[in-house]
Image (cartoon, rainbow over all chains, first blue to last red; front, side, top):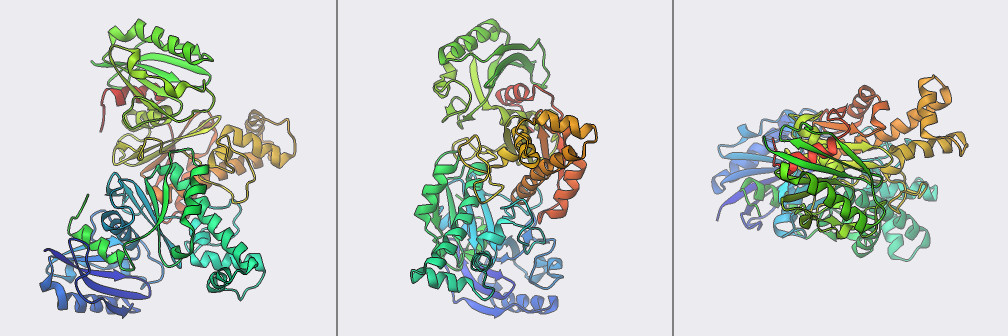
Length: 291
Length: 291
């Protein structure tokens, strides 16, 4: 069976493993800290690739940052990784074909092929973590837009510049629906600058009413975004993934979304392709596995 | 040259004309008041069709309401037209093939083929009128979603149920960016329940500072929505049409959108396909004219 060497590149960690065309992880997952400089990142990539490229048909990167439509380079800046990372010449890293896709897009593809949106032609995936990532599947194809940058969930939740977003603008969905957003909502509501998102989750689980209120506000901010996306896309399903997705009540969100939208009924579900969905999806895309 | 009998169905008026496959209107435009009951609407359609169907290859409806993916029926309720209008059996109205599409989707297609988004693969069109309509063209195809209802611009502008929208929910883009939205923004800002959107436009043109402030708030609400759409879709262009679009400053909007988005630069432009773009687009779709 054909397989890919999959490499997940985040601002903090780099993971690598082998993935076959069924989307199965078929070797150990290796973990590295993301090096600080471009040259060190380059060296790490080469080291991983030299070790494994003989065993695989293709090298598949799931990376932070928007990836172009030819799947060989990064578009513009990428936040918390070496500033010149977008200059990476991925094709030169291996003798095998190298394929690059954004990590959230890759994870959405994994859900589409083997996970929560399997068998559905239209799905939106949101990764709720430190930030918010988005991946859009339309008519069984990954949607990338004119240059490849589509799927950025930075639509606005307010009209009056209240909360600064990591993107430099204000009040983006990401700045409310992320784990960071939960922390900021808690600090605003409780007027306590020491509270963390962990405190909210722990408090909510222990029945602390203050924390339950904060959590509900955060979840309703997620709901607000889901309503907008369901009205724009008329999707079969919205998939929530990432470290924060485990805490939300998808039955509640499904019910509320369907009450508010003017399009046709949809579902909100949790991701099923696992923690390594980015690598799995990039491998499946690189291997040309479609539905 | 092949042509279509095009019929535009709105809550107030029905228009009809003949359109050729170049998107040219090749007969007079006939105008009717939209009848109040289902039976009367049916009779009007039959009368128009009987008069013209021998001259054309296909009958093309551009209608209010979401239209299904087989382009032969209406999905769900449609607002200010006879309640049972969605039951209309369009195919039975003519001996010729009958094709149905939503009016905003049709207008977006006219812009794509002969108007402001001609030659561009990815465009979002917004009609700013009494309400807000949306039409989405992705990879040179009209985007309809799983059931055909996509493109509803009811994403939220606030998080706290401030302004009721015609859709029954609160604070949708439509309720801020429409002509009705301008009126409501003026009434809120000026604390005067008699002011109209016409007053704002007239005042703005006369240099009235209060009205200029109201207008700017309204235009910045439109801007807020455009930023979100540009981040989600990475489109080539966003086209503004409808009666209110003539007043906005598209150079300002383009500049501001490109300052705020995290995707790649886009443009905001005014529509060019004219007042009958709905009929033209429906005709072009019905005749299978693509790029």
